[in-house]
Length: 265
Image (cartoon, rainbow, N blue to C red):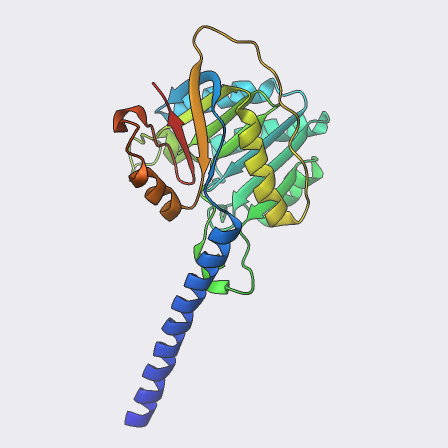
């Protein structure tokens, strides 16, 4: 009995050592291939949404105006009434020739059934689960989820922030109650960077490479703001922020890992 117990403890110890080694090596490999990236400064019109209802209304309105392409990436996408509104609109756009690419994290999209995937693909939508399990470094890929929430529309309008798609983000979940988060709508050439990041993730997840569209020049307006986008892993971003001593903290609005946005007031 004692020998069996020792063997079990040894196996458990080996498993945790293997798990720790795999995660560390996987993280090292990923961060080397995905270094901290800070975009050039852009100017554009920024609109902040602290509530899901206003965000969804704005996003659905913009989606109805799509003419050429729309790319969407979310960590969580539920199978419930508000989510189906988005799906039905995407299906309609795809049937009219719009290039629709839709990505959801493998774990965050667990609500999406195979029948729903078949339905959206038959309508012309290109669908993919982000961050599939991969070898080597299986344990790292299991833990390394894609928390991005990005939308890029026709080269001139994009969204980035903390909201996912589901009824709980409208405050309709009795257990969670009122939900407050932050999301930005960006009108301007910075949408190119959101699109480029989406297509980079899309290529890694599907193997299908596609270059971002050229910059869509937009007319300037009096209410534009300067901003930059930073793409990084959480740790590298944290270290970078701690190293910044020449920008007052109140002039930095950090929105959502891994798509933090510096918004200069």
